[in-house]
Length: 393
Image (tube, rainbow, N blue to C red):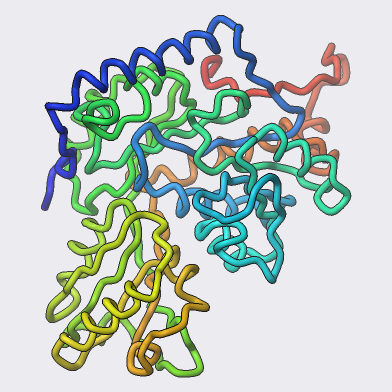
């Protein structure tokens, strides 16, 4: 089993540039802290999910957990930047949207949650304004901001910081020597910190060591999650058969990924197959004809029986791709990923989220229970708090 921080690589010779980068980022954060640059709060529940490290902390499965938690009770919107999309400005996803229109991760979520509003806009304030005022989405009850921890022009009600177990921020360095977007001190803005991608067999002592190492304030909740894999899904159902995990034991796998951190998937799948051959591209990579030829050749070189496994995010960019061989189309699968809370923390996490949303909702039905239990002589002014108050608990 690998240990915490084991995927970190620091380029020492770039540290002088990291000091310059750090000075710029620190100055920007200072201007927000003293109010020269303004953060805007909203009268609708806004939950931000992000990280300090560049890429690969598991934002999408954590946002999807929040969607599943909230969608049965209220109208949910997810607002993303839409990284590497080929469009500009605000765009609301629909059934005809492609990865080039809105980005691969927003498309993945739209396909999973068709009743959820999925929108993209680099300017998050404008995106929130459009979601809350446009006729098509004005009934939204809660907005989830995907990858917005550094977007300080918006002041979310709950700020969730994700930290990859294998890239703990306490061991990393600022860009470009390391992969930190800002100093580790930025974690103080988080209301909740989740250490993601934890090994399933962590010992109680290791949880205590991690808790001490993160050195959080009392008002900050610390949670731990691990990855859970679902049933393999054929990319081309009309041409493929269902493949279960237990059937992979004697199969040779080509693991095709265009994500920031594929190492964990490689390790997790090794115990379930005969051999695994990684074929790795850059994060959010758009596959070109030469890439397709490379995929075809790599698959052809594997001994039979053989299949290709890719991520749901990569599947969103491969769905309408041309040039894949007929054999690949019959044997390529997406591997769904979801999160599982450790230490029986899920109920506590879910309750904090639901409590915040219900107390700050514009929807009178959602706040009815809270209003019904108030004393009749309450001096409540009718103004709802805009930020969850872990500090008061």
